[in-house]
Amino acid sequence: MRRFLGLWLVIGLVQWVAMTALDYAVLHAVDWRFEAFCEALLIPAIQAAAVAAVLAAPGKASGGRTLAAAARERWILPLAALGAAVLAAGWLADPRSALSLARLRGAPNLWFSAQIAAAAALGAGVALRRAWTPRERAWLLLASAAAFAVSARQAMHWAGTFSDTSPLGSTPFLRALALELAFLGAAVGLTLKASTILGRTSALSGAMLEASAFFPVSAAMIVAINLFLRPRLVPPWSAVAGSLLLVGAPLVLASSVLAWRAPQPAAEGS
Image (cartoon, rainbow, N blue to C red; front, top):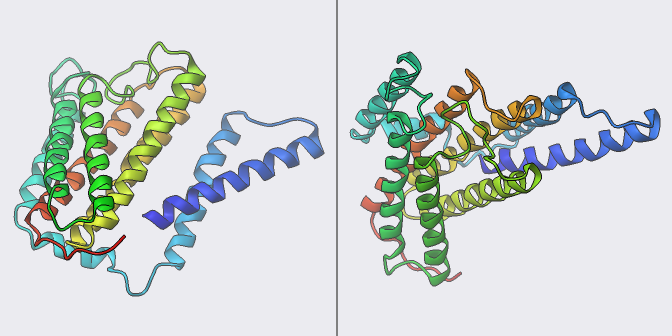
């Protein structure tokens, strides 16, 4: 996942700069209509996925082995089943129901926040273990603090992902967009950093936390595409974005539980 996200960022930036310069040099105009915007987001993602698959490290655990290891943890299946039930109810329930994904503070929204808050609390406990180096402990505490912030923000209505509302609120658009991107980048970066550290004590914990980074990035892409056409995130895409977050949350919680239960790592210099 780390390789995919890095390649997506690099390929996307290179393509955006190259195509913008080419449009201006040849056509004396810059084409940033909806189709071009979608291509700038989606084509680099497809290219990055292909390159990441080719460059996959032979010695790294495959997705199949990771799933098999997760299946051996019997408590993960009930957690996944409960999450699937909340997600299914969110799609099937009447939009006015507390179970619906369309509700600002409905069951899906609170379920997401509760999982991230629990993961943050466990992560903070893991970070306070004496075996970590000071730098590793600082990174883990920062990641836990970011998780608490995400949980609180989602509980109060984060980025419009569970309703037909403006994802950026009433703040001026460019300022709000910059803040959203900075928040997303910090959260994803801290997730990936924490996954590397936790992977020392539990390979499965690190792999699950790293995989979880895919879901908020995908949800953010859906938000961005919707924002290009209108200042609101509308159904069914609001439900799709919320669903992505709901799928990623159990991975974060499971990673924290696995790290909590794992033996303390041997201290290393940093």
